[in-house]
Image (cartoon, rainbow, N blue to C red; front, side, top):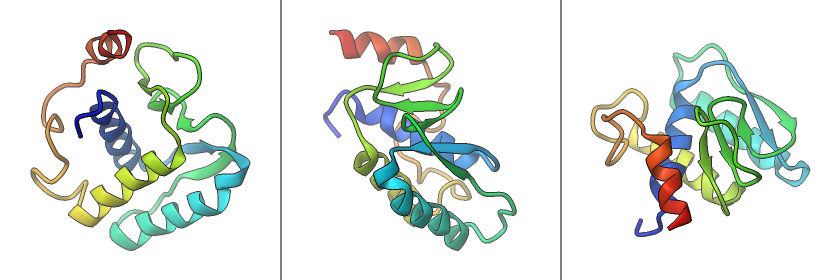
Length: 125
């Protein structure tokens, strides 16, 4: 949690879990694990009717978040120098805590407006 990237990684996981229908881009080697993650969403959020589709590409969901790669547009939550395992861990932790259907379980910063510009400045410091 002391890693400067942690809040951005947690924000990416929150955004992913709040979005009903999207395309999750993953490396080819992570497709099976991503399929398991989508199944975990179905198991933990039984009221959900639409689930992420999985495609091969740079880890992220267009205009929501991107893990690694070059810096995306400013509306996209960016987490440099992280990978699938980091992201998957955050998503599973949030699901186990009851997110998004719980109050206060998403951790610090979940209830405030996200400031991507400030977060990116910390990566450069």
